[in-house]
Length: 433
Image 1 (cartoon, helix red, strand yellow):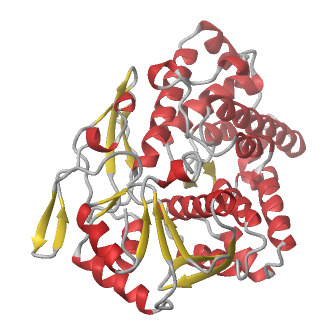
Image 2 (cartoon, rainbow, N blue to C red; image 1 turned 180 degrees about the horizontal axis):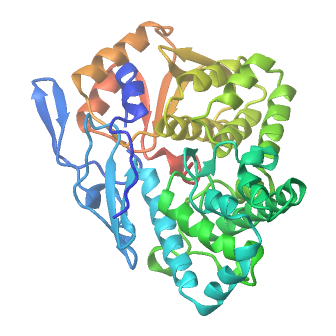
């Protein structure tokens, strides 16, 4: 059984201990029990209470009913399949995992065909064995791409075994490996795009299948009709909200990692960001190129706002895990959608390491991808702490992807917060993951 490791404590928990907050899709179960007379203890959340019925199970997966919530702000799901058990941190990541599982099922069917086996056999002489192992079994990866992959072209160690045996000259072996890796990278990008999956996903099982099929197409005779590769989800329809926009998908398909980095650097330079800030952002290894591109595109949409550097600086210094990266990507997407559909954003601030935005009407706005907002003791204390740092008469808006408990609504309203739950629909945006 394969499994994907996720940190038990999501970054949203850390943010919400500083702030307070929220859910993604469906109704909050009435199991928030009182820990003390005026506070709640989040208990008893079930998948069937927070996810649409049609995605709870399908031909290739079954979402376990028991949901781990820890302090309640983020739901942690386990998804069973014949390919192993997969973890999803947050309601919004569940459809992403289902899309990946369905893609794996399609790739497995492809691998079992005679054409695939013939193609794999033909591809055997195209790459040096050490290079083949690299792309089939990547290690020390973040987001599914081997660390230093593009240094392979100049790495004599990759080809030295063949050279020592007299099977190839250094020049011949390097060119051969380089050409094959370029083709492999291009073909994998195309395949991931056609399947509707993130090429930088942390799903190792997905990458094993993608790499295997791509290998057969790179040097062999196996071909794929990419137009027929779309993966359908529940009720026979293509899963919605699984990726960012098709434009983002095409960017991931059409550009190498260095190409994406150049695009992001140019965009941030055009907005006037200092080189040191840009470098910290690009060099943060916990942010995949897809995270960086999504965040950069969202910042570009806020180009008229003052102090956007505060956003990028906080992301660069506080992203320490994949969950952090996903959270900031979602925050960026949500505020970009708010800027487009609600009121234009004019300033970016950070308060107690919480991203806070000000709109042209003077209101302070927070947007976070939170699954459940319960009124816990910690949430109450930290919410009041943030409020003390804001102008007392300023309007304050809290937009979350999920829902608030009744007690949280009562207490937050008393503190002057204007609340918006299930805000993805209100902001007219797709799943930011």
